[in-house]
Length: 99
Image (cartoon, rainbow, N blue to C red; front, side, top):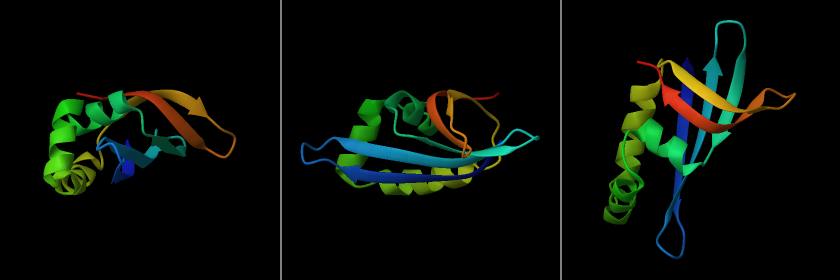
């Protein structure tokens, strides 16, 4: 379950958006902080294509979507795959919201 989620966004000099995600997740037995900027994970969580993300970024409306999705995704069940460090930080390589 996503306990908290924060998106960070910036535009590179070539106009390409970069989105980082920091989440606290809890599986009922323990918690971990999860981080990623992997495009496929970002697309999955934002429920849109990278082309649409580019368009939203260039139009200036991406920050509004990110704020909305932070609220929308809190409490959602998520399946993730990644690498868990000893300090309970999980580097996500794949994610899917549970139905």
